[in-house]
Amino acid sequence: MNIYEERSECTLSNTNRSGRGKNRRNSAASQGQGNASASRQPSKSSRPSTRQQGKEVRPQGASLSAVRPKGRERESAPIEGLPVSKNEETVIDIIGMNHDGEGVGRANGYTLFVQGALPGETVRVRVMKTKKQYGYAKLLEIVKASPDRVSAPCPIYDQCGGCQIQHMSYAGQLAWKRQLVVDNLQRIGKLNVLVEDAEGAEQQGIRVLPTMGMDEPWRYRNKAQVPIGAAEGGLVGGFYAKGSHRIIDMESCLIQHEHNDEVVAKVKELGSHLGISAYNEETGRGLLRHVVVKKAFRTGEMMLVLVTNGRDIPHKDAWIGSIREAIPHVASICQNVNKKQTNVIFGDETRVLWGRDVIYDYIGDVQFAISARSFYQVNPVQTEVLYGKTVEYAELSGKETVIDAYCGIGTISLFLAQHADQVYGVEIVPEAIEDARSNAMLNAMKNVKFEVGASENVIPRWKEQGIEADVIVVDPPRKGCDPRLLDTILEMKPERVVYVSCNPSTLARDLRVLEDGGYRTVEVTPVDMFPHTVHVECCALIVWKD
Image (tube, rainbow, N blue to C red; front, side, top):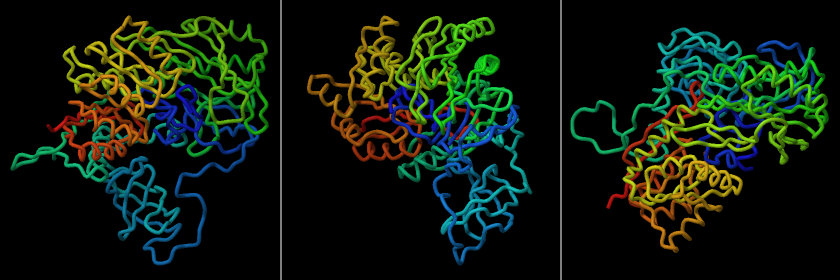
């Protein structure tokens, strides 16, 4: 899968990583999230229900069995000797929260995971599933609430899987995400982290800074990918319910830009009026599969992509004319044809129905052309924060040579090129490199070169050609860096390595390898790219010890 093929099983935040080619390598995880811009693993559904905000709509023909989370696959015989049993009610203290956003508590030493519970709370729960070393429980009552508990403002928060921690204050989210990074560095990487406000002897270790959050952590997403179904009265579209392919119709998503909501609503309304059919994933019939909307925050331009099961669109001219009239700020209307019975959203053929084939936006002073299938970071405000931290850690004076591994469409490469003598970017997806080169030309940047290939193969070849890097920047997928790339870094020994990560656990693992090879991790800055979800990006500075 490449960055031009986003699986509908991906979740809200994983469908959108740092804009650097991660989607081609990521499968569903994230960002554990099903939503309007992404879907979860498919189950099958059957009956439609009435169309209303927050109403579950099972796509026609799909079964009721959802794909269950790992570890909950099947019922098994009761395990003897556990301190709790299935369906038992008990009161426990929540001592932490795991990476899925579930509260962690213990009943007589036995670990229970409780969705919706927050650290510091005392809760009454019902045990729903037991395994040998841990189990899952349902929250029944909050006996003692956390000071970080808030009322989730989204009316379908309990049904939708797009956000996991809206019930936690934003300050609490930022603190928890920092602690998640610290825990991973210590537990997985076996790394020494400086203790905040420590007294006594001077410490040595990694500084983990406070999480860089948003002034306004709502309406930050610039892209919606909405699965379409049918119900009484016409088309429906929205989020998939947690762990399923049951569509929860929605009119508004509080983390989407308002204009994205407006476009999706209008497309559903106009399509219903014109009798446009929804795709049936079991029979393979029906036309409209997904509605994809992209919003350029800086320029205001919007792109609408209709993902269809076939080329022919009934009443096409009337539909396009009505959309243009109702939504004048849409600069591009495209059609993507996907006839395959698959959970990949996009097909191979894309054509322009009206307007341009791209819209334009900026991150900082760098301009980017955004096409129907090219990946672009979904939170432009925090993208600038993250890339700014990357440039800061690189400490460029204008004389350095920088290698950008996993460069994707060149977003970070072009940021670095403003401050470096020469930047080399490598990416395994040919289409991404084409976009990277186009974006370099768009910005008249001649000091950046891009090459297709695996970084662990290309970078050693560059070294043989006499290209020595002062700084190497890596921004790998969730699985982390390829071991051969880490070996290459250790062989080249650049003065600095800047590691941009979307997964604290693989970051910690890779930092351990670099530290064992002669590097020292100086500082890690968590950046909140996806407020109200469990995901956190990090930027880490690693230097050669000499």
